[in-house]
Length: 114
Image 1: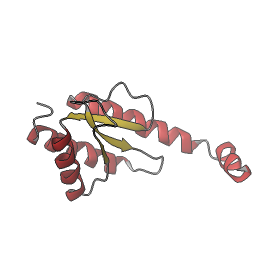
Image 2: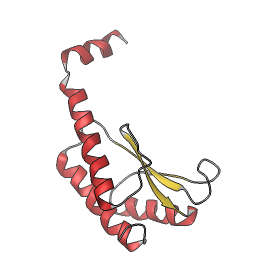
Image 3: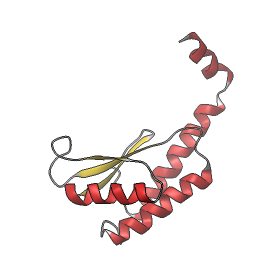
């Protein structure tokens, strides 16, 4: 724990990168038209709606090299199934752009966004 506290004190850019990545992804998903349930953390939910569509969407993400986890009933209310995405300080901007691009294409293909 003390080593972790040392890192926090000695490398503040880690938190700056984390929150920069979080803001980028939150804005990106919102601009694309996804419902992120007003997330304020580096764990950003993306509402898909239907349980089966959420599973299929998550599988398609994986096939494009994007790992995320589905959250369906009973953990999510009916019609509010979502994909749980999470971000780290070490994610590169081009990787985040790729994730947004894949979500954009799949979101349109699945009818989640226009």
